[in-house]
Image (cartoon, rainbow, N blue to C red; front, side, top):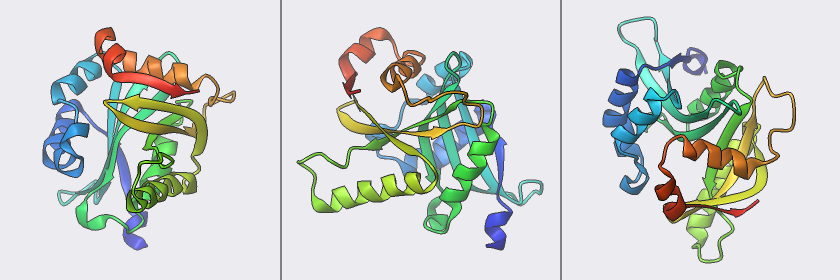
Length: 204
C-alpha cells in the first residue's frame, strides 16, 4: 500500500510519450491495435492528443514508470477518449490501474469526462473465456466510477461498447449524444475516407 500511495502522475511531452510507445505500448497491445506513431504525432501537433505517465520516485533519478495513458482529445466538447491505458508488466493486478484512474480524474479536472471503448462482451460469437475477460475489464472500469452507455461502435472491425467517466468540470449529462462525441474525436485523427471505410456507430 505504501508503494501505491507514492504513485504520481505527469503529463508527458511528445518525446516522452514516443519513448513509452516504443518501449512499452508496442509490446503491451496487439499489433493490430497499435496506431503508427506518425498518426499520433499528427494528432498531437494539432493539439488533439495527450499522454500521461504514472511514476514512483518521480522526483528522483530512480523514477519508475508504473503505468501510462494516451488520450485522443476533442477540445470543442472538452472530452477525452482513452486510446491506450496499461500498467507496466510485473505491476499488473496490484492495484496500480485503479489508482492511476483516480489520479487521472484529478489531473483531467478541467475536462468534461473520459470516453472509454471496451470490447463488446455481448457478441454471440464469443468464447466463454473471451467473454469473461471482457466482463472483467468492464467491471474494472465500473469499479472506478465509469458508466456504461447504450452506444456501440465498430473500428477496424472490432466491436466496442462505450463507457464514460464523468469529469469534475461537467455541468450536464455528458452521456447524451455520445455517438456524435465519438465521431468528433475520430475526425480529429483520421481523414474522412478512412472513417467512412473503417468506423461506424452500431448503436446509439
